[in-house]
Length: 474
Image (cartoon, rainbow, N blue to C red):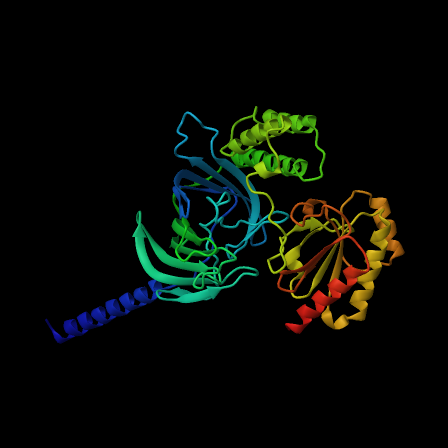
């Protein structure tokens, strides 16, 4: 080998070494982005195991799990997604195909893979049974790059902190995935109490870094009943991506029509079951007929939601279903918990307005009937409150629960109301508006700080007390 050849070989070796170093650097740091587009459907399948071993209560249940998530449309960086979660008890077998739960939910997914569910309960993990709206394949994405060993804390209003960590990489069905761990626990998990239940969540997620979507999820939630030292139950959930399909435009349009109709009928069904709503058997029969008529067209993968809805409506018409029978009723609106997100029309412009658009300042929601004498008093009080305490930057928002536009416009004009006015009918269940006036105070972080039904001399005092508490935390 000549001197020139030796120099060329050394240069080549150095070049290869540098190339390998660059490649190693490239794969040791990942910038995660969500790559999901309208018309793409993700299908996951798995199982759920539920155990209980508390004092006097012992059982084991197993369920088959299927999750479909179809991106319907895009708005800016947000995707509108239809989630269909189907849970079937394994003990039921093929002879009982109607056993289990079917839940269809529409929501928006942000570029950070966060789920926003306007006007309804956001997806939450259940401590008492399998989660009926499963979207655990979406991992909240941070702005900073991820490296092996990287860890961070994620906080959400009204929820315990989540501890995240990049464990490393692992090959899964030919795909190099990031292996992530998530730990979350109630504040009293390590200090048992006699007056409330504690829980601990441990999750392992295999994330495809190219798509920003999980390939596999394994989760265990342990719960401990009050006055107990050891865990008294657990729910183990495992599921894996089995297909990712792109729908042709015609099939996507068929799915959109069926999904939107099912969501609309679902909301009507929930409204008929609302306490105080005197629905007749004929109301339920009409809803069931609409669902059955929709099932006469070409079938889509989401047809099961309409079929189950028709069955539930027929059962309600016979008096076999009450509010308690609904698969997942709206939770109690609690002080100290995150307020339900919403997306409702502005009364004046018709443009949709979201709760998150008010973040950063206290919000006083005023649920009113336009023709009620008390509505004028409430609007006058809210105006004076905002003017008297400008340092609190409180934003009062009027939400009318009826469709009497003439009366509402007259009231707004007479009170010279210069604050937001929204259509509030869709929030009746999530904000538990069983009577008006109904007022809800939300702080700048989106957490409920007070709720008040009715109107009397004590209500302004309660609101002032809660506003002072908020201002003292700043």
